[in-house]
Image (cartoon, rainbow over all chains, first blue to last red; front, top):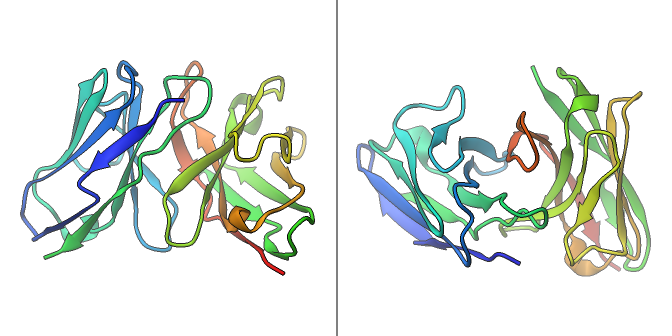
Amino acid sequence: DIQMTQSPSTLSASVGDRVTITCRASQSISNSLAWYQQRPGKAPNLLIYKASTLESGVPSRFSGSGSGTEFTLTISSLQPDDFATYYCQQYNTFSPFTFGPGTKVAIK
Amino acid sequence: QVQLVESGGGVVQPGRSLGLSCAASGFTFRLYGMHWVRQAPGKGLEWVAYISYDGSRVAYADSVKGRFTISRDNSKNTLYLQMNTLRTDDTAVYHCAKVCPGNYPQPFNSWGQGTLVTVSS
């Protein structure tokens, strides 16, 4: 099975900061990588798929990059709504659709 | 707009069974693969099971294989998860999720709010 890791597990930042989260796959997944945002008590929300394609309706301050085994999610200017937990997910193989352990973005 | 509403959660003793449902609306249910994803309290997301648009293909996480069964009724726009031989580590909020359009595999672009399953004696 493909394993996913994320770093950092938690980061503290202020409104307006540029934030970068890294996700690594245990083997190459090409660009079959998605990013989700989950606010407390809510369902996850798809932000980015195919490593860098922004889902419809997602603000342009979110961007994704990478391929193969290393990927990044960047928030160019952190907004109050962005304090949440972010998960990467690989969907390259039939099974399982592995999620990373999550990165919590907290208010500094 | 897309709506996914889970039901059937509750408190159940270890070793017992429970069935979950996910009522779908706002899209052509019979055209999309569906998943179940769970989240234990305070923990991350864990993929549980997948079913293709027509039910011909299913897949399970190793942690539930042989105990859980995913199914769907396209005439009722409903997804199901039958959970047998439940264990305490199955305690979680269970979400159903719809896949993005396109050839398999695709990420999940709509999620239900989830239903809580608590396995406890």
